[in-house]
Image (cartoon, rainbow, N blue to C red):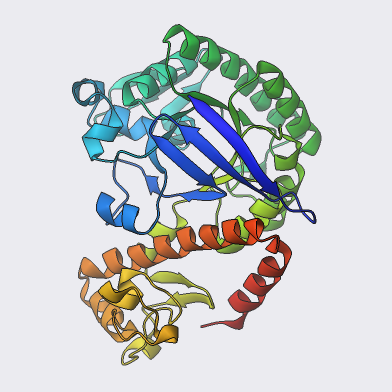
Length: 390
């Protein structure tokens, strides 16, 4: 089941505000989806995700297939009960993870032969296998198996001919994914994935053929795979708004706060990225006023929270009142710096809570700006604040 209701659009850009209804709940868009690779968003309890406003999270088909395996997943009736998350879940197809195995895999028209990174077993992933795994996972949004077209491989930048070959195989795999999804009578929603590398005309061909297949939703893949930022932004500006107006649009694996705001302006409804969680574990924090590296010595005795304007548990404590509004709860930069220096696990847990809250709150602010017909002013103010620096 998928129902997409367009609520409002921005007159000066392709930005839009919508509501996405899935089998496990309603998602207000534009939305950022935290990544839960192994059935968990690293360092965050499901209750905390709900408290910070997460509406939908990701699971990783490839890794969950490897561990714990489909027998365990079947016994729980899918991923929701297994990880105790009753809201919507999107699962990727496993294609990117198989592609990233490099020389450990061989891609053919039939699918991908590869050695398990867990125990070395010889395995095979095809569009049909991916649909079968995702049906067992019972994710609300299922992604077709595609071939991720790299920007470059071992210093060789992908040519137009190579990008076309990859894109055309992904289209054939899209049809096979769709046929197997229907055969399995999966009650959820299957998204097609636009490929074509850094070539707009290939993106257009991919888009048109996928639209003709009439998927319930569409994703833009093959970005944030090593290309320069300006190349990614060029494809982001070209593709999303050309997809159907009455269906959701998902930009895969993107990105920074700036990427999210600009992606919304280009017509994107849904985003995911490991950046807020991965960067948090490495000591980098996103704030309204720019990025902050908590490992820097200047934070050793700083009593301020990470972001004085933030109402997350890390910055405001249980009161939920920011310092800018008179609150004085939360954890200081000095304490977080100390935890990082000592290697205490509480440190990355707290910075992850903050980063995810920041991303989810940013999307809430975007939705509000669209509802109030002031997205353009919000976009300008956002850029000015982020450029100010911490």
